[in-house]
Image 1 (tube, rainbow, N blue to C red):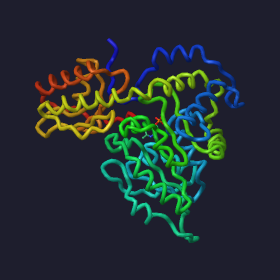
Image 2 (cartoon, rainbow, N blue to C red):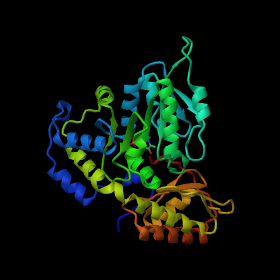
Image 3 (cartoon, rainbow, N blue to C red):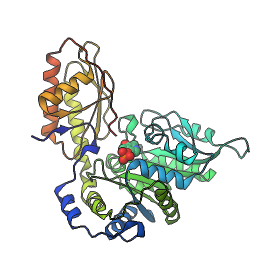
Image 4 (tube, helix red, strand yellow):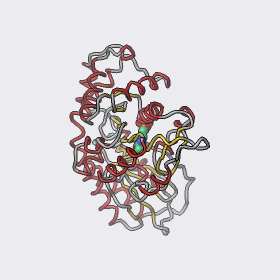
Length: 359
Ligand SMILES: *Cc1c(COP(=O)(O)O)cnc(C)c1O
């Protein structure tokens, strides 16, 4: 039996259609701009998101990094939410490679910085101060239970950015989950931002890659930045082919993952010893009651060893389970059954806790 993996939607294998497309992909040297499959993917992505141009990159982190390098320079400031991936989980790339100063603001329960705080964070023109240049948004908000931030917030941030000539970049690693949740085409979200990165390699199941989209001028600069960070990939059409399938076939089915997440949450709420957080899209966060003697890592280990089910232990008492193409209703029910069984026979000993990051 294949393992059932709820740690992240990054664990998704390519579909059979993707593997066929990869095998048959026409390729060329993409550093010369000659890979027809990469060019097709970039045009498709840009068209889907209502932007002039696209750039295929190795990962979401690389997409965010080259976007920030293209939009800002040394001593420029980026206004960013405290829970955002660009600030927390990308090795400080904006500061390390861009000399960009993060201006970190608090976020609410679905990942929004307050508009008043954004306004207050924008610097006047003064030689003592960093130069405000960027506002960084994220949708869905991975650090806030995968919440989808509604369109009106994007419209309001756009207005502020226009008043002050700021660039708005969206980390849309799970953009299509957000669009699905909001019930709108993704371009309705991206119309409010200057640039966007989205991941092909998460819920869309492609093996590798993300795409950055923006104006032709912006993508020209991002392309230079991609070279700078060693991101030129030659016959990348082999992987871009799977990305085309991801955009054509996988964006319209994400509601199934959201339904499975809701099913999982409803089941967890019925299990003694578990408290489940609000579910927004494809992520389910839950914690153990104080009276449960096992810690999260020990439970995750038992699920692996006894049931071949993998989930992420986020701390000694907290888990994250992410639904995706390769976990169906039956897998959800197996996870629920496994947890119920383990929690009904608690062992006495707490094990050493290992905390992981699963993307
Ligand atoms: C996964 C993710 C990224 C990028 O991740 P990579 O592993 O570099 O592809 C960026 N932002 C968010 C919110 C993510 O969830």
